[in-house]
Every structure is written in structure tokens, then in C-alpha cells.
Amino acid sequence: MAAATSAGCLVARRLFGAWSRRLVFRGSACRNRPIHLGVSRFRATQAATQVVLNVPETKVSSLENGLRVASEDSGLSTCTVGLWIDAGSRYENEKNNGTAHFLEHMAFKGSKKRSQLDLELEIENMGAHLNAYTSREQTVYYAKAFSKDLPRAVEILADIIQNSTLGEAEIERERGVILREMQEVETNLQEVVFDYLHATAYQNTALGRTILGPTENIKSINRNDLVEYITTHYKGPRMVLAAAGGVSHDDLLDLAKDHFGNLPSTEEGAPALPPCRFTGSEIRIRDDKMPLAYIAIAVEAAGWTHPDTIPLMVANTLIGNWDRSFGGGVNLSSKLAQVTCHGNLCHSFQSFNTCYTDTGLWGLYMVCEPSTIQDMMHFVQREWIRLCTSVTESEVARAKNLLKTNMLLQLDGSTPICEDIGRQMLCYNRRIPIPELEARIEAIDAQVIREICTKYIYEKCPAIAAVGPIEQLPDYNKICSGMYWLRA
Image (cartoon, rainbow, N blue to C red; front, side):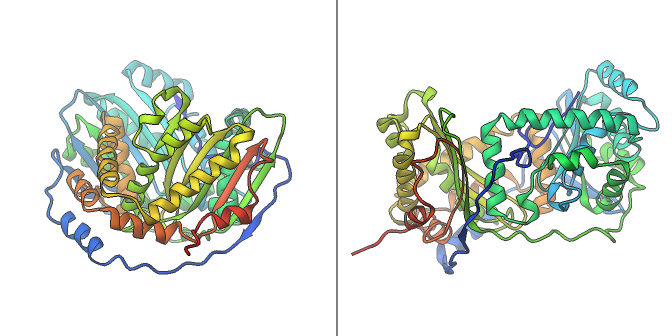
């Protein structure tokens, strides 16, 4: 039984506070010109309204206190059930940054009903798994068990969420665990770079802070901080009890009423989601002793519910990803992979589209030899501009098929389905049926991609984070000049 953060505890969506070198912020706000998408956007919306519901259906109910119950019954002998909470590091301030993640760790250290040993033995005897993770906007606790043990799994989740003792001795022990975890994450350069990327892209805002928090906060967080976070954020309207596998929705609803019916139903006292302004800027941490450079570049993208999100997902798939271990780069559909492999420009790259409630980051992460940084950056930006100007219908059709395939492959098993249900209920207040997503993707054409990429990429100042031997990384102003083409 382990506590994990956003896609696993060591994939904690970026540690930043542990780095002590001097950081340099440079850059400026960027121009935003409106783009009118016209008929293509209408076709996408129209197509999405003509599809059928998921089979099996995702059933949704609500308790009187606002807690939502959502499930999909696939008739399996196992199930995954979890509590998705609309509370993460974005709801923290500078003084209590790290509290949500700290609290996630404390949930497994014993309750008023069960000691830590009792909890661990009960989970082991059931043959179940209990886990959790924290992201910038969500905290999740979930259990995987036999379908017949669903009532016990829900009761255990309710117990650790509502009745954790938060003992002083356990807090001190877990403080040391988290500090060691921070040291481990610091060795993962990809995680470090993405924390720096958030820090420069969302300067002096909640999204610019890390999930684990700075070392000084971890050393000072106390029981009162944890209790205050629970009473402020753990309320019915901000929670979703989601389940998938062999689950009866009616049974799950009854269990929710029994174990979560007494949660507070009002959000009075809960702070509103703080706005986070994007700033085109950069952070450079030069270390010539490192053998490779780790670089991320991104522009501001759209939030979860924005209609531009799906076109940006298709554009993200068009860029793709590549690693030397793939072996077939020159034959891949990704133009950037072909150029990268042929020119031996980097060890690996991967595109990303990270969404939050009202903003997002769309960009690329790369690992390069010092001598190839400049060329790699040139071809990355050239490919971005090509998406704005000359992407073809055949490329878009291939990317749409790949996106739909990846989307379905990621829903293999009760746990990813349960996670998909919980996340979408928090983000969209419903679970979007697969046929509707497929219809929205299918309605996108090359014209839409060109218009959307022009809207978010062309003439925009990016956020850049770079660590390692980065002497050859072009000047920030030169990188900005690569975000558009001068046409004769």
C-alpha cells in the first residue's frame, strides 16, 4: 500500500522547491489576436450531438449534500472504487503549499476505527490494493478489490477520509518520508524541468508552485494545517465517488448514502479557484558537468472544457514523440521524428498537452546533446509553424486515428476507467461518451488545425525551462522570433 502523486508518487507533477540555484525569469506578456473558426467548429459541435451513449452506460446520481456517485458496470469479478476530490496544490498558498500531498500520505496512517497495522492487514487479507495521488487540481484515494468486497472498500475509503487520527508521531515520521521523496524526485530531471516550466509560465501564482511544496513548508506543516485543509475543501459538492468493474450502481449509491451522507454540503469558507496568468518567460539552470540538456518549451493552451482542447490534442498527436530506442524514426509519421532521427538531433522528445480548469500548457520536452540543442530547437519551432501554415489532410487523418486508438487503449481495465470517470466528473460534471469524443475528433480537419495552431502558437511568447549544459540554447528573444515566419 503506497501513497502516490499524480500518476504515481514519483511522477508527482513536478518538484521545484528543492533546487537552490539562482533562477532567472525573463520575458514579457504576449499578443493575443482572436481567430474565428467559422463552419469547421460548427461541424464538430453538430456531429457530437448525433452520437449514442456509452455501452455500458456510465450512471450518475447525486446525494443531498452534493456528492456525486458515478459508475460503470462491466460485470467483472474485480472493481476499482475511489474518491475524486476537487482539491490539490492549486488551492494552497505559499505558507501551506504541500499540505494536500502531506494529507494524502497521512490518510494511511490510522483512523479512529483502525490503526495503521489494522488497515494494512485488512487490505492484505482482502487481496486488495489501496492507493492515492495528488495533482495540482485534484486529490484521489482509490481501492482495487474483488467486486464482492465493494462494501468494505467503500467503508475503508470513507474511514480514512473522514476519521484519520493525524497523530503527532505519525506526522513526524511522514515528514521524513516526504523529505526523502523530494530528494528522489529531484533526481528525475524530467520532473524537475516540468516544475521549472510551471514556475516560469505561471509566475507568482498557485500553478507555479509544486505539489510537494518547499522543504521549509514540509518541516513546519502541523496537525492544525491538515485539519484546516480537510474542513475547507473536503465537502460533498467537491467530491465524486466513482467506480468501475463489477459494480452495481444502486448498491454503490446506497453505500455512498451510508458512508458519505454526513459530509458537509456547503462550500462556505472555501476559496474560489485562484486565477493563474500565463507569462512568456524562461528559466535556465546551466550545469556544464551534466552530459545531457533537458529542455521544455510550451505555449499557453486551453482548459479542460474549452472547445479548442480537442483540436490541440490532435495537434499534439501530430508532433508525436520519439526515442532513440524506437529504432524506426525515419519511417514514423511524425515529421519531427523523421528529421530528429536523420540528423541525430536528440536522445528523445515528447509532445504534451497539460490541461487545467481554465488554462493549459501545450509544448514539447526534449533531451539533447549540448552540440545539437540549437538545431533541435530550430526544427521544433519550424514544425510548430508548419502546423499553423501547411499541415495536410492526410497527416491530420492519421493523427486522428492515432489519437482515438490511444484514447481507447488507455481505458483497458477497471482502474483507468474509474479514473476516467472520476476526472471527467470533476472537469466536465459528466462523463463524455466515447462515441461523442470520437465524433468530435473526426470532425476536425486540416483547416481547423491550422486555425487553432495559429491562435495558440503563432507570434506567441513561449515559456521555457532548461537544465544542464545549455550554452547553445538560443537567446530567448531569438526563440520568440522563431514563433512566426516573415513572408516576402
